[in-house]
Length: 235
Image (cartoon, rainbow, N blue to C red):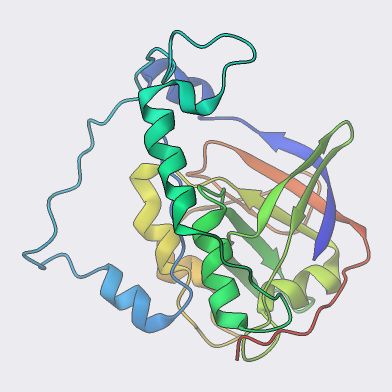
């Protein structure tokens, strides 16, 4: 896991996006090539067309009559919710059932933001990849955390960040969600995902790694604390 300090923000398209009121989506990346291919099966008759017109709508809270101290079971929806407790509880041992625990965390902690990470190796090979173990740690100083699973071997992003200490994190939006998903493909180390994804490199101000021009919000980052390594049992 990397704890990183954010040194520069890029907000070129953000104002326009807010003015249009266009909702911005958070994709869940496909981490394997076979899943990537399946996710682009646009001819499947089972899938409806994507709705580009979905908007966020402000509503009343679920229980408008709520007062401080009210119990959950005092509302009709709350009563239905508490019925689930009758099914009992299941305890998971974090030292066992690695894959089951992985699926549990993915389904239990959602939605999650995705860090679309641009990095560059010591020899200048650029890499682009999404990671969903990512979040804000602090605003002052601006700090984020990213965790990169090793999988079969160490990821290029992890290797690059350790070597050069700098990278960018770009937030993904609906119009280019498929381009971002394409960067999940397991390409050789000397092949840049930028060409595969069809995204545009924009020079950064303070770090070697470029930012994604299409992103509404990009952060230029440098490693703040040494990375910590944990053995992975998801093999």
